[in-house]
Image (tube, rainbow, N blue to C red):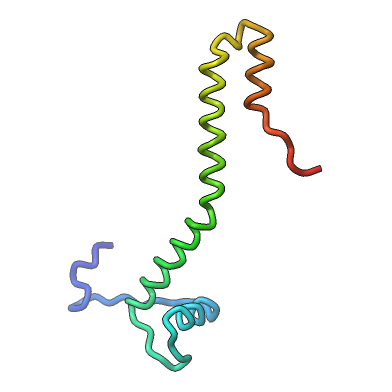
Amino acid sequence: MRLRQLGTTQAVVFFAPPEVYQSILDLRNKSSHSYIDSFDVIYWLLEQTCNGIEQLQPLYHAQGTNYCQRMQAAADYSNFLENAQQREDFLDVIRTIEQQT
């Protein structure tokens, strides 16, 4: 939907569950009877997006490190398909040790 006529012939209505409504109020330091406009909703959405990215940052780092290790192992042991010793060395690098019992 393009919403070219937003504000003239088109309108947007936001629906949110009570916990989201309260979260918006808390973030914007508004009372429970305050008016929430589209700025408040967009501000909350951007804040939630940034929080999510910050929480996933360690995962992104771990995935990037793992990828680099696998690519380096493939370069170091390029003959791992034919050579049994290189295959074992390659697998030692890329094999992930289980963290849970």
